[in-house]
Amino acid sequence: MSTIEDRIILKSFFAHLSERWSNENSLSDITWAVAKADPTFMKTFMDAFGFDFTMEKPWEMYREISENDRRPDFRIEQGDNLFIIENKIYDRNNHFSEYADQFETAKRGFIANYRVEQKVVQKYGFVCITWEDFIGMLSKEIQEIDPEIINERILMRQAYIEYVREVCTIVDIKKIKLDNIVSLYHFNNLLKRVIQSPIENYECWLYNRGTPYDDSSSGRYLGLRRKGSKVEVYPWFGIWYEEKTPSILLCFGKEWSRYFYNRYDVKQSKGIYFDKAYNDEYNSNAITFELNVKNMQEFMKGSVKKQEEILHNFFKEVVGEVGKVL
Image 1 (cartoon, rainbow, N blue to C red):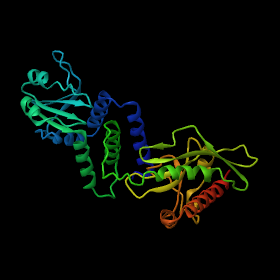
Image 2: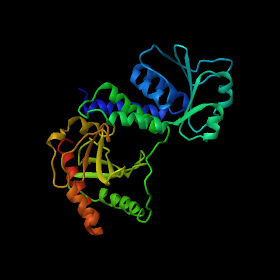
Image 3: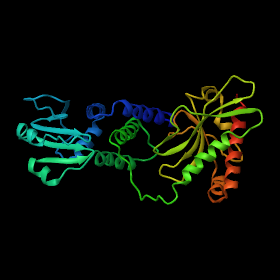
């Protein structure tokens, strides 16, 4: 049985791959490797194009086999059937006419992170889909599986989906409301004030290295130590707002808060402003304290003074909890 930690590790691995292996060749290489490792993935890939492909007959998939200076990303052979598939990320040089001439009898597919005009597709006999279409099929297949069943195949697909999302910049766009976005500016300023407010027996300061924000979060890094101690930790304090109600978090990453991370037992944690600390798939390798629902609701509807009070008390309580092992 795979554990949550297994899911974190595999997703993290593919996420890091997407940072370094983010071009078309890398995406094709990763897709080829997953298809070779998991034939059912290969079947879904071919089904996405509507190709007549079966798992009952031997097949082989090749990467960039050159033929008369034509080198499609994927070449699949099954008996007398030949399939070629070209992959593109943003690049509009699609080689439709060249491949149609060179591989006249082959079933031809094209996959990209953008859509192509149907009249162009029909002219050259290609079946065109997007990477978003394909990972949508993979996601649907995962959803149809009993949620109690978590095996290597499912873990691989989930991690692969995240990789493709990152490489192809695939996000779910929802209605945008800009009427109160200035609140983020005030929230970050309030964070600075809270971090620099004195807490008995502890020293806290703003830490300006690292990027304290990304597409789904905004906050600040800080330094923290017990007075007189040489042990320091560098957590992130901020708000996370991806695809759900915003959450206010204090995250102690393994890399920057190793002393605390290695010694703290999340099972023993419990506070007034936070429930149990956790280490989940969204905060890989970080012990996270989250402002609980009751206090978050009061924060959302409270005055500025009340918001500062809640944020300060939450911060102070977490600092005290962390201080137990510093």
